[in-house]
Image (cartoon, rainbow, N blue to C red):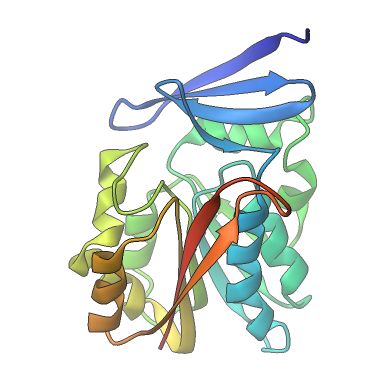
Length: 221
């Protein structure tokens, strides 16, 4: 039986502890013993970026903001869906998560981070949104499990009315605001509509062919 390796640990600004594990070639990040993300199941993260970015493939100079680096799957899927002149900013509040993805000893996101279209910011996504009025064609928020924040308490700000309006204000015309969530949330869906967005709710498997479902909230201006 192959052992589970505890590779590294990081503390978020609010004191939340994230731990990086490896088992049989697969990586996972856990919070309080709960698996937050894994390289074995990332289909819903891939689809989140594809749905948000594919319509921008032919848009000249498209600009995309991703909240949360995670294990890099959202970023890689966004890059695959965008044109050569696009730019992608990734805001990640936990510096160690950036380090893990940049570490060539871990099979994570070294190549994606080296893409010339990518800018990584060790910064709170809320801070980026506040100073980015009408700056992005798509904003992809995959910072937590949904409106019920699991990792950092500050993430909850992104899901209330103030946070939603802040994100909408950072969109260019015909922009897309996309959220990943572990489950459905009718109240959150209604909040997106009240912010003036047309909203599609998409249920996507965590793994391409099996396992549970996650929810994508896709809002368009």
